[in-house]
Length: 355
Image (cartoon, rainbow, N blue to C red; front, side, top):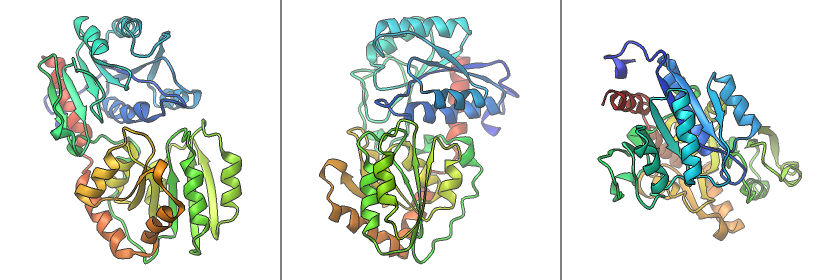
């Protein structure tokens, strides 16, 4: 707890998070804030999520973490009425700092929050807002320091992978990885909903590989293509399992030799675990995968899913038998994310409470 050496405990100090999750939104905003919430609770504090949309499985996950879930009505995410409901809930629980995470919360929303006297932190990853009105902008992106933010306040900028926060399950990992001659244990994960079913496309390519592999496929409760997935998986030259709504992703990564995934928070988790990966851009805001590949050689990037062919997939799968490439990627990943971001962010929140 060295980051908080000036404070012995955060008991009864209240951190509030405004985020949502759904089939359309995905689960990333809820889950990346959970890493901050867990650390806050580890220091003795209380955590509240203010939500409008939240699948029951994720709500149960938060409740299991002893995190309070407050629901607000709104017809439009990020609207002024949304901001007013958020302010009302925040003040009802006597919150001290509000974390805002979601692409609907534009400058006017942030400004409404700040004008109410609430101290806020906006989590960004691709410069989504027209302008920013907040006390702190947090962006762990590899290219974050090159962004020219339009800010209507004197905001502190926490930029770059040094501010990567990780859930508790990852921080228990001992950061040692043995690279086998061939990658036999392969993990596929494309988020909680995967509406374009990139999972099945990747699996179809793996079916054409003669390597004997063991496949772990992680999907969410909103995944709708189970029949197609089972059809392809049954043709594999190896074993497979399909898991849904997992809460042990770190252990799945630990026992894997290779991951096939999209950009986003998962890529930073893989980097911390030193797990080599193949990444595919599935939505427009996932710029991180290309930076991981081009700037740090920390993944094999196949490009935008809309342009990918079966041959592109198969070419990327050459990493399965390329031990030297997987070793290089693993070393670069370990160097990229050090696991110290949680305390750095918590320290900034504590400083904000003092101002």
